[in-house]
Amino acid sequence: MGVFRRAVGKAPWRAFAAWFLACYVAGMLLSAGFGIATMITDVEVSEIGVTAIIAAPLFGAYLGLFVALLTALPMLVLTSLIRGVRAGRPWADILVGGLMGAVLVQVFAGGTMFSLGQAPMRGVDLALTLGFALAGAISGWVYWHVAGRPRPHDPLPQKIVQDHVFD
Image 1 (cartoon, rainbow, N blue to C red):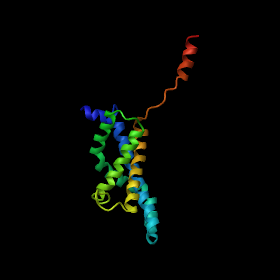
Image 2: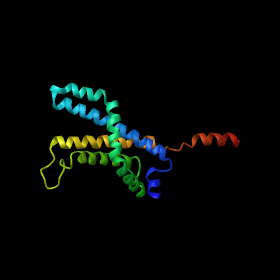
Image 3: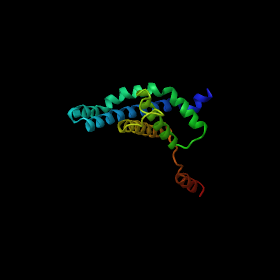
Image 4: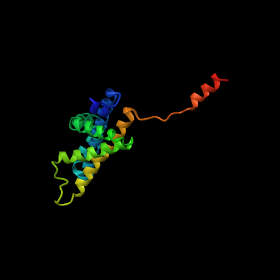
């Protein structure tokens, strides 16, 4: 139970909701990214790219569910490790999201994009990996905002009350 509590914090439902929203955002970004890539690389089927961009909110739900299924266990482990070493937020959330995105595209491709000792990554493979990493990093930022980012303490209202009460 300690690892679970460390991974999700004091508000598990809020953490899960934030994670699902982050997965949805990643799905929308991936849909839009694939649409943009299709428009750039193949002008003859650019209407497919436009459709992917316009329907990104709908496709994002499908892709987000897929991302959630693939990242459920790895994110619990990574989040637990990050919190265990007390890495600073929001950079830890952004970094974990970006790394998860980059690893996820390698899993999709069966590890063929980046293999040690083989030919270097092609430009398309590198762009796809960077796109997934960017989608993951943005999703990590979304997670940080929704899951309860620390808010700065403003002592001014407290000081006003104290000055008024203790006159």
